[in-house]
Length: 462
Image 1 (cartoon, rainbow, N blue to C red):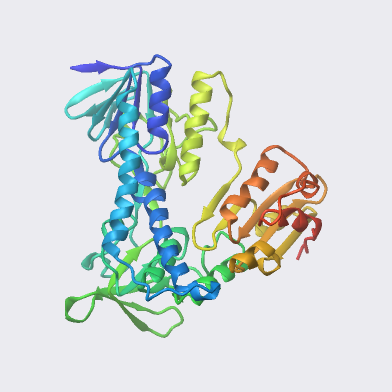
Image 2 (image 1 turned 45 degrees about the horizontal axis):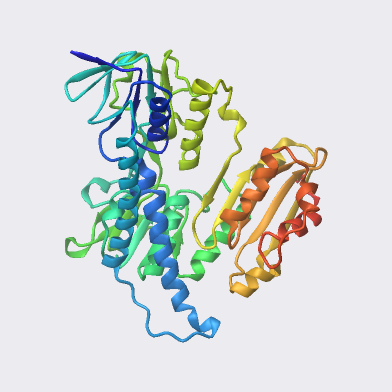
């Protein structure tokens, strides 16, 4: 027995619910299928809970620095059960709001279960066949573990299982020195844990320029985080008395053993595409399991689209939401929006945060065309000195011929917010001089962006 619909949306992550509501509001009989929880990674074990935890960790950090501002406080302690309870409440608020919104939407049904394709326009869920001429996949991804000897014999935390932690790890070992790993590293160090990061490469977040990696390492080291680099392989076992974790590494031909109480893996993610029956529908994936899509997020099968982490075209909440905007505009509004039109932008939410847009300096150099660069240390920014937060720097790269901004790395107080002023100018295809000549409010951090642009100098091609 099959149930006909106009549209099927599989996955309740960032783009799925928004698309389902838009389709339903357009008069299409729509069903949203979710196997675990509404909101996906962002709401349940990604952006919202982790940034809530980051806020608690920053509060503890600022409290410990109170004397620097002439404020006297007593000893600072962290109640991890209360920290988790606050995080859980914030997550529940988001999930409850999403649940209520979907329930009130006409023409929209929510089905709980795991969907698998039985054909190009049909899926099976809970023993029932659902059919529709339009199917949208928003199935997300999950964490992977390092392929280390003995890793299967010890408890390993991921970004998902960390959300259940309501205790303070005595010594947290983190495998992976990129965005997820570094946010947890600073967070738990501020909560009071010893933290050691083991990174496969020779520096942190290898996609960034070297001075960005170096500055982030120094920021975290000043707070007491330890690092080991070029950890290509390791042997993992339980610690003494079967407690904790022991990791033996050999990064420079000299073996050493690191003991920790808990192990967190933050080495990457894989798409949730291996149990969808994609072969039954003939939907193509690449070698890593990502669903292959075109510039409008259509798969190779007519009537099937893929959005969010599973399509390999972005791994952020904002890229997933933009996927929804592209598909909705093209299907319902007569648009011709494309993935290739959007700018690459993201942030690393340590403190201070890194706001990134466009090209890195390495990518600008690879163009082989004249470029300009401006760099300003935060020690020269009055607002940063007033706040006592002068770590980091701002860097902007500009095409010397067209005057267009090519990219920026803002590792500084409010860098995750300031970057949008540059992003908007780039999206508007404006000359950098528009911002340079604009009058900004004093005293702010962003008022120094025009000053930074005034200082542009030729980028050394070497």
